[in-house]
Length: 158
Image (tube, rainbow, N blue to C red):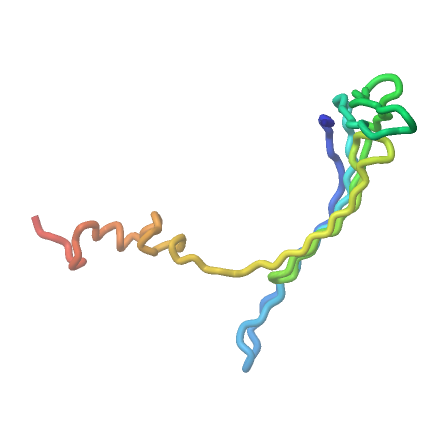
């Protein structure tokens, strides 16, 4: 297992477009786009790599080699790197999302490189239980609060 603590710092550029128009004969139309480009630098001052056991019970020539414990740290162990980076972009157009990212994490030299691609589809659903004024909502209008326990809506004369 590898354990490290890292600090991230970087820059991002965002673009948010929200256009809504009312066109005669077509009704209300609109476009909503959001994009973000980012570049980050990572620094890990502390990196710990645990020893591991490799099962080498295969026959090599005429000898059998039992399980062997490999030392991860120290002499003959892995060479660590304390810096990393990542560059990516996020794009949303209405209900479609996309993320592209490449980078190299801190940890072991020549390891930790990665590429990430994600796609998503948002399904717009209105849940009436959470809308103000619904029977399950804790948000009541002034009219509903004032008529507590009085079904007719008229004030009682005391």
